[in-house]
Image (cartoon, rainbow, N blue to C red):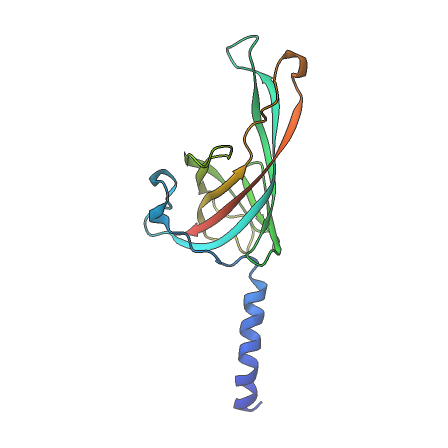
Length: 180
């Protein structure tokens, strides 16, 4: 093959490689502008950014150690993860677990939260466990939940009459992934 033909194919190959990466950084986060509690650790590199939209399930339960008093308790989240172009690139669910369309996934443990806007779940920083599977989630060390909208416990009454009742509350958040 001639050198000219190779030069013409190189941009096509590069575009193909980019298209096969399920999630790309499309919104750089100004870590220094965030509340200190949810900042990614120094030396972290932002590797992915997604918008998660879904529901958080709450259940009406009796308060622990407070017989006769009830509250809405967080049960589980579920969300679809999309990239900047709006393409579905993965899902988020209880664990917490973030799973890319390529099958790779990561779970983690909450390190810190910070207040968000009223009526929205808090911002969050999670330390990721090592990824399972090969793909987009490999190397992820931390995940931030930012720009939260909605998701707080229902305002509806919770008492003995509706004990065990479950309600889903819509929410949206940016999930920003980092590697060390």
